[in-house]
Amino acid sequence: MKQDKLSTEVITSSLAMLEGWKLEDDGVAIAKSFRFKTFASAFAFMTEAAQAAERLNHHPEWFNVYDKVDVRLTTHSAGGVTALDFRLAEAMEKAARAR
Image 1 (cartoon, rainbow, N blue to C red):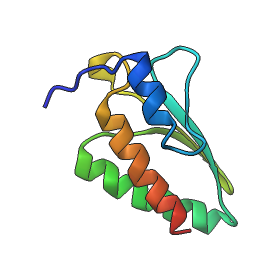
Image 2: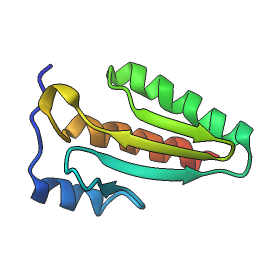
Image 3: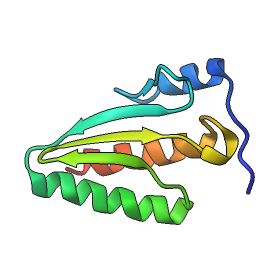
Image 4: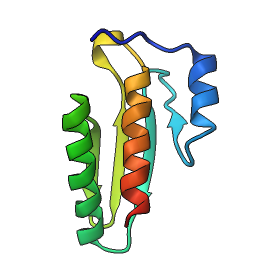
């Protein structure tokens, strides 16, 4: 399903509902750094987030070192941020809260 790129105004208002997420300087992605108590908790978060990504058929750009997971979400086919990025961000928030 084709995703439409969101306007900066829609992105900004949607980000207000997600704690800690920001629009990257390039304007084509949203990002957040998650911190966990342990590496195992970070990895459990990534596992749950990966399952959500598979269900959505939308995959994050991410980087993990010990208890930190840096996430960047964009929809390459749309050339920017779409509703799909926010759906995955919400799933990641849920996964993080479970840790």
